[in-house]
Length: 120
Image (cartoon, rainbow, N blue to C red; front, top):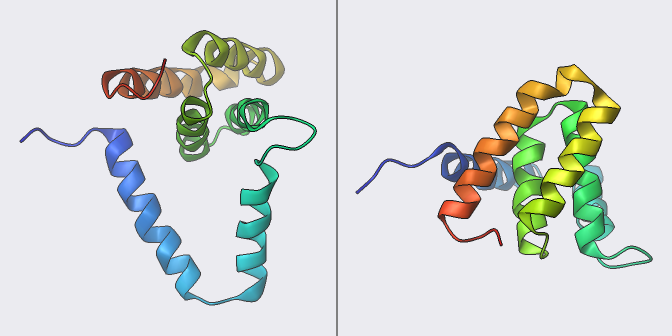
């Protein structure tokens, strides 16, 4: 059996940590998580567009965990690699050169998603 890649380890850790956060049973935390989930549902903007926006914001804010999460959601909502790369270009322009290390991170994550067949 092969070793797990960085994205697979991230998924596992995120699930474990989210469960621990929910076990805190705090109403405000639960409401925030619910609001976050509902924000990305179809509305005036479709989910696919919202996830691309989330990806751009995550790259500009330089959060690799957020980048991985939104890359997965972009793929699940039907974004193509070309659309995702175009969105990452917007992040680079908005955020500047400080985004480059996170662009590298995103590029590796895209490779993982392609290898597993998640990304078109």
